[in-house]
Amino acid sequence: MARFPEGLVLLGDAVCAFNPLFGQGMSVAGLGAELLHECLREQARRSPGNLEGLAQRFRKRLPEVIRLPWFMSTLMDLQYPRATGKRGPGMGLLHWYIRRMLERSSRDAVVHRQFHCVLHLQSGLGAVLQPSVALAVLTHGAKALFVPLRERANTDTLPPPPEARPPTS
Image (cartoon, rainbow, N blue to C red):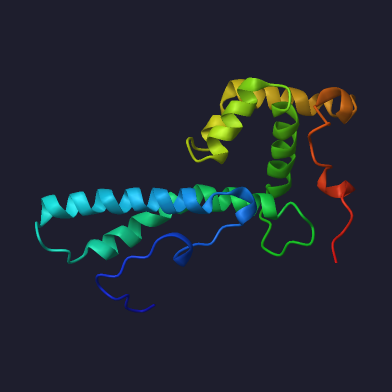
């Protein structure tokens, strides 16, 4: 909008709707509500009793809350060939890393914990890129060249890889 109405604040799906499969919509709405609370406290200190400019300042900071979960959600969606959207440089490498991380997390509690901290928005992407996790994932990825999936991951509870799934009509 060229001019957004003063005093109007949007949260949750009104701002950004997530794939419900990943269960992040309510979490992002909650983080947005926390940001609004923070902005209201700052506004009360800055100008008690006056809400002018609050909505605009909140809108400028809300992308900070949305950026990581949106990236993760779209990244996961775009691993499927039939999904539409721009696949930037390095996307295939990220998909490879995530698949190896999911495999490794089926047998490695540290990788599993860090992955879930990111998935549940308790940590940033750095949690799954820190050396101890990245080394475990990359080592696991090297094994993938020589060791069958059933021997390197708990395949009893893993869904089949995207390339093995039948196409949907």
